[in-house]
Image (cartoon, rainbow, N blue to C red):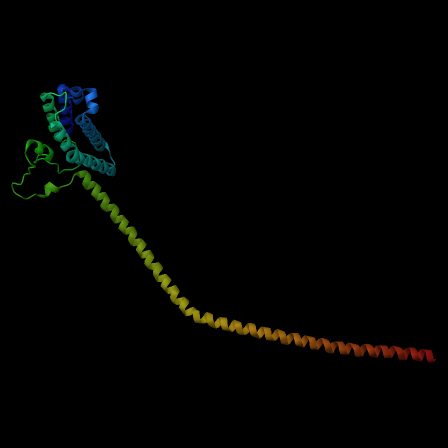
Length: 268
């Protein structure tokens, strides 16, 4: 029997037996004040939500989305079994004013049917509990959790994953391999850059003495240039003074010549 058939059968049974309707048994006012009714309504809503998520995961084509939905379903199922069911069992046994013994027994039957409803929800896991009883139900009936340990060994099929989980694992491994390849390429590039930086550092170490020698030569050339400028300035000043003396002598000779010419003219 498939999961859909089980859910359809459960819905038909709930519709057929109206006495299992908690809101009808307790009434609107009682449901608002009765902790059992509130908690049972919350559990029933969580179960319906898990069923919807399971249907969505069944139709979803994206593997990552399917895995995420199945993980949410498993977390919700674990919360229902470990937290909500024990509370419902305690509340179902608690006497409430206005309820008959038959109605209390009906509550117990409702709680007893919840583990099967929760277990029937597909969550993408192939290792569902098939051979044992739920701890919450066992505590109410006085039993304990039972497992099939007839041989004490489990074959590989017991731990075999589903096709979805295997496909997701293969995709994960492929992406991990691609990521490792990319990291290897990046590592090779970084190694090349490291070698280039080391070579540049060695070349700079060899160039430092040459740069120091060039600085010394530039300083000496600068000093020599300053000294040459000073000597050149002094030479220019000396040349200028000698030239002025020659010009003065030439002018004096010209004046004397003119004076001699005028004297000869006036004398005649």
